[in-house]
Amino acid sequence: MTPPAHVAIIMDGNGRWAKARGLPRLAGHKAGVEALRKTVRAASAQGIRWLTVYAFSSENWSRPKSEVSDLMGLLKLFIRRDLAELHQNGVRVRIVGDRVGLKPDIAALLDEAETLTAGNVAINLVIAFNYGSRDEIVRAVRKIAEQAVAGQIAPNEISAETFAAALDTSDIPDPDLVIRTSGEMRLSNFLLWQAAYSEFVFMPCYWPDFTSEHLAEALEQFAARERRFGGLAARGVAS
Ligand code: IPE
Ligand code: IPE
Ligand code: MG
Image 1 (cartoon, rainbow, N blue to C red):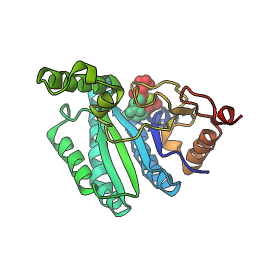
Image 2 (cartoon, rainbow, N blue to C red):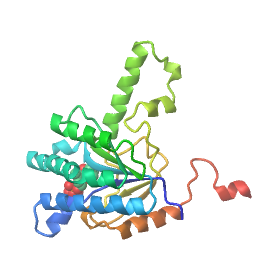
Image 3 (cartoon, rainbow, N blue to C red):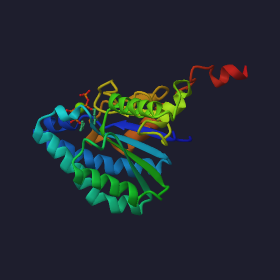
């Protein structure tokens, strides 16, 4: 079974995981980081080339200040603690999302992670941080409008390809499979453009409980899907 080239995960349910145990939400987020560590290893072992994870959305700023600051702290801790090991394991780290809205120390850490690992080829780990698709699309439209005003691009030269090239994900293939944990069945502003033809697997488990078995189960479901991209099924074409 060839695995999908690009798996994207909406890591959801940290808060409910903690609540079910009578723990503060922060404990759920910490357990979520541990699940992320294991998932990067499992995805790499499965031969997945691209793993994108939704870590903090542009709407997550609306949470209580203390939780936002806990999540920022965990990102910093994750990069400081794990970057060396990720690098050793050949992981190339990329960040998508609006970096302008981030504090300078966090933006610097994200830059460092990308620069240090730029030459790695084992697996690409794309972290969606301060990411929201609508925000990404609006920033892309602004970029293209500025190019148009400067006379660098004519309106009739704008195509799906030139538009995709203006997104944060410009040199990243579209996800083949999107997994969301915690039982919610929505995108929550994740990869709206890029997931146009992705397959979706929704799993009831909370993110901190996600294991290599859950990943294997999602890959199995993906393998049983028939992707058509608006055309006819491979079977249909042959007959
Ligand atoms: C996902 O878990 C992590 C982030 C959104 C940062 P949640 O914090 O959304 O957990 P629930 O959905 O409240 O259980
Ligand atoms: C999506 O989860 C964002 C991340 C996993 C980072 P949310 O928990 O923020 O989504 P909603 O609010 O349930 O739609
Ligand atoms: Mg949630």
